[in-house]
Length: 517
Image 1: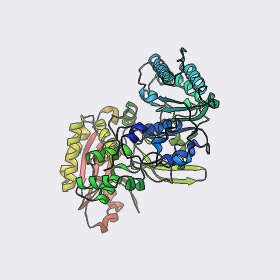
Image 2 (image 1 turned 45 degrees about the vertical axis):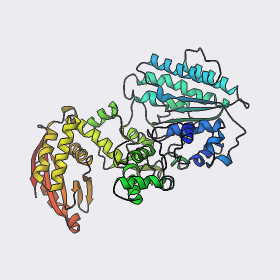
Image 3 (image 1 turned 135 degrees about the horizontal axis):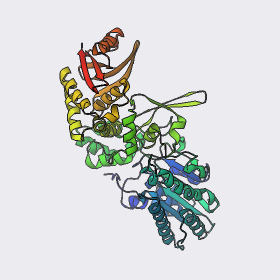
Image 4 (image 1 turned 180 degrees about the horizontal axis):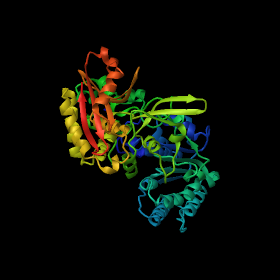
């Protein structure tokens, strides 16, 4: 039986421990053979294998050939040459003040100097200590060069997003990372990884020499598992998962794709499966949420409360996906870079490159919306879940009154700071979140030949057409459904069509009128 790794981030431990390694070394070769550069940056969502990739490169440059036996890169690499590797894991730094932040970086650099048998710097500025470390370590190599690997470069900043102190932290890191550029001559290779990419007027203003591989076709499948890799490397695991769920390997594969696939890191690339989530599924035999183990950031919560996002239609220009300012982050950019959203489709008109985004899979959609629903409701998660399930059960049973009643309870608790910018779109988005995160087949802004239906919900035997009005009657909402012949789209479905007009009151901040046809 294959062994899928879930919490091993060291290449040597993975290889020596008998875990299944999906061979990505062939994709690493263009990064390390000078064919496209020698200093790189790549961003990927968390729990996607960035640290394992960095560890693999560490072992490669140190010449640990025995770990690469049978892998694609082994016969193509010159094992007679080795380089000392400076490996900085910035994910270990979590501090509240800039002074603590500076000291933590200095401690990290001194520990690395000790590991590499060079004298630790007594400099008080991280940038000065880092420059000395690169110089001293490179001097120990035969060709006077070293390798610099920086993992999770953005972790020290992400916890401070949109906070007043973010500027001070950013200003501390800017000259520190600038050392990567200014010591380029002392480096054989350099790589920075992270979740986010900050704009070139921010930290990256001193790192314009890095080749950004984040949305490059050559590295689109470098992290994560393609469908072919999943079938080739985990055939017995798929059989085991299938048996645990009353199906065969092919049935298990389809469910893995539905739950954990869907990430696309270049518009024309293959989609890939989240490796850690698949590993957890292999370990437990259960299809459930493994990806979202931490709460959403305060920034995301506050922004989504002020500006509810229509998750059914999200379109952005490429410039919005590539980078943002840490002191003024854009919501959609952050959602994309952190893995909550991925590329669904791409269009180019002239010089404008436009991306349509969506949730990558069921796991992320459930994780995100389940966290968001109680935030919108102003309720604790248990009460929020109870209301949601009551609405879903009524929907599946075709019980219209039973569907509306828990929704009214839900909306009655929504706090003022969420509803002070009211419009129909906001209420529609909240209903979408309430229903979508518990598996209801709900769609917003559904196109017909005569307009757009605010929302549709489909069950095995019924289609619910829902139109929302703010400070207008439910009769007007119902009349719009009839006037625009929205039901015609579903005439051939063979399902019962239920038409619902829902009116919200900006004064009472809840549902005040419902009409059904």
